[in-house]
Image 1: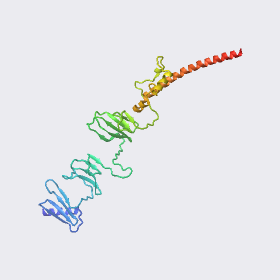
Image 2: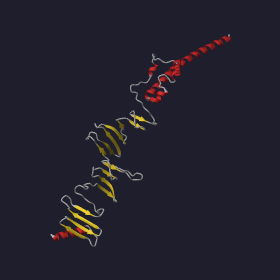
Image 3: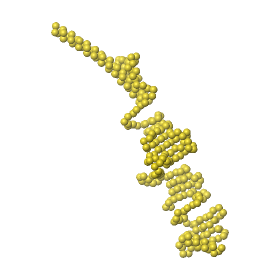
Image 4: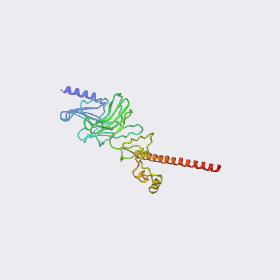
Length: 307
């Protein structure tokens, strides 16, 4: 037994590559560990109690020059956080108190917290990279089983983001492949945090074309009906003098307070153009009659002069 124990100690010293000329090894039955001592410090190896096997040293850290393989789990000691780092600095921390995981921070306040402290361009905090040409999810989350999963997937260098509600219906879909992009929930605000319509823009809009669907509204062709009550020009003049705006058209104060509805305003302006057209047609008829009368009078004058 003594020969076997001494052989184990010699093998342990050789395996640990202790280069000190006066290294010492000791063992004791009372503490159940091997202790290797050099002028640089000591290392204790052994089951210090019935619950754990111990590696204990007075140095600030352990150094392993080969990869470490673990057949099981890695846990921090009771009351201690678990940290994994490089170059003497912790890069990933798991809090012992609540299991929060921090990357770049020692005190994560959330289940996963990433502190992005890199300086410079393109120093990204998170990068998801995939070389799979088939459709698959890069990011996937659910709060109600598989009925309302949300996330984004990639296929052939294109990305598709989907956000679903509790029933599993896709309320938001953003695509980079030319497919339909849509919002089916709530109001959307650009330049405002309190949109009051499906799309509220506080600012300018630059576009090539605007198409307005006239739901329930029709073009004001009723102006050309025989029974349409067309205000005469004197009646229109009297209304303008009294109200300072055209009949049926909102005043400047109303427009400032309530804005204008583009579809209704366009139809109203078209109605006024049609009314003006009727007045112009009537005026043209009157001018033609006057020209005819003038021509007749000129003829009579010429005949009188000749006689």
